[in-house]
Image 1: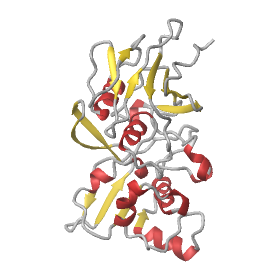
Image 2: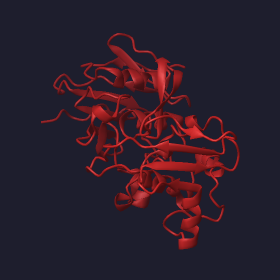
Image 3: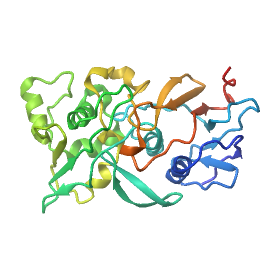
Image 4: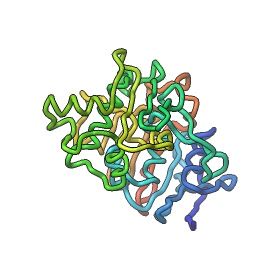
Length: 291
């Protein structure tokens, strides 16, 4: 893969966050040079910051704006990696041995990897306690269930996620949470089952899936708070559970700032080494320094 690179000044993001980002993108950092790349060939590179930029900021350049950040509309592996690292947690996640090479699947929102029956037709996950959305609301299994239900809404059917939609034993007539009748909702609840205490999910599948733990690492297996679901506008501002949240975006840049509700005590996979992460689109250059 050929990826454009420029000096990162200052190289302010520290720890595993940038290393994990580089690994997910399949690129290698070169001392003070770094790059993010796409498996689809759309290069992304760390951009040179202005000399007067606050030293806790990091700029990342990408040719095109992200089309979708809503997890149920995002079938792009590069965007999924970006969301997984900075914004959104899923039941499972990926650990990288060397840049671009997956070492294994690890639990993220879940306490452990999934427990399956012998035929791999049911998979069960229990959520870890004390995880919160950026607004301070606790994350429950019902929020993950609701997030997955949105996968079936008519306007949100990303072709890149068809394999997930058809794997779950959800009736083909289920129209998603916005149009479902009580009978249709009950049928969905039987396919994606939540325990009475609201902390355990059991997935019932149409066919055996020994690799379901890998599938459960997709952002679509993350939570969406029903009261904060803005439907089509959720793309602009999905509620974060990762170390950063969206502060603002335009056609030129996407700005991430620390998520005040995120805690390393409930997340051993990520850290937060930058005060701001600014993704610059096209050749617009870094936004003006903060004043």
